[in-house]
Image (cartoon, one colour):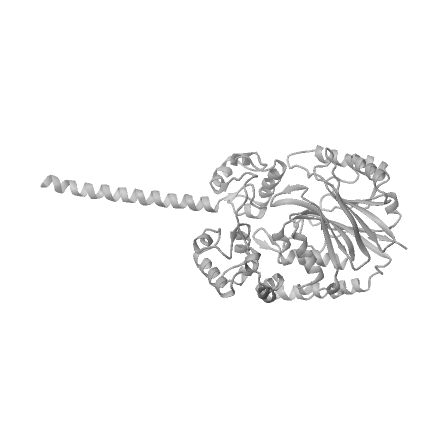
Length: 495
């Protein structure tokens, strides 16, 4: 009996220890599962999302994205150690929070209109309380019409929205009935309602001086302006941001642009959002611009020319159909062996007087770990081949090659193009960052044939001001730039 009593505490202690071990193991497994669910896909995560990782700053996040673009994605997670600025210690601390997809895997986005409570709780940054509120609003409003409508949910803010945005979507075809469309608020209105009063007032009050300048500008029947703008991964998500729309449309309207060549378009739908705002403005500062309500803006876009972080890259043109500009013909120039991205060519009729050939280019970007970009240099030299080919096959004389060249116009690689009687019009820096507003290099340009130069008024420039918006996220804050490239323009006259 004494023996039994002495063994009893030991047995109870043993059972207690086993229960405790099981509890620890269970919690560890739950923690690992939570990490697995919320892990960042290193081949899809954005630069801003990388900042959420402990120890990763903006410079390192940029290097990670650059390395991924230059090498066609990561093949294994330990490849992060080859990124400039990554240390073994930092890699060890973040590797458990990273996952890896192949280029063939398709990211499954969670449809907010059919998502369950459990699925919502698995989204990074979303608490059970917020998940419940989202479901309640979805039920009350018979579904969401856009992701930004989440800002109407109490407790939701811009930071949480930017965190979950890469993981969610709205399947419009399931929710957009005829009656719904008439009741749906514009994205701009949704954002305006959630902004602090001082920011709301700042955006509503447009610059009367700039509006007057546009209204009293030179006659557009005599002069027209052609611009180029690398909009840096203009995906549908980015194009739906009212801050992005406001900056792009305001710059276009205030500077009297007639045709704009766009690089780095992330999807064919992206330009729809810009065109809709130009033609039927909902943002107050765009509404207040003279004649913006009479817009007949159109666009043309190429097939995919390359891969970017969040999809395929396209090249395209925006043009004002109300100002005597008519699109005649478009084509992608298949210059295999010369250019990694096929140039996109468009022929425009100008006031029924001349036909102008525009060639939209985006040459290969410089790799972060290279002192010299041999690929870009090779493509720059190939521009002379393109110029000679157009001379032999295109009847129009007035030709313009414009876009992102990723190499300065004074480089010796452009000598062959100059020998074909082309000349560049931009000498200023065309890149920009919040830390370096004056830029560092002239990486974008507009090259004119000798016939096009005869129409050139001598006026051109790079726009460096008013390219930010309090709606555009930059890391953990708002007030970011619409792109790290500035818009550049040149003016022509038919007088």
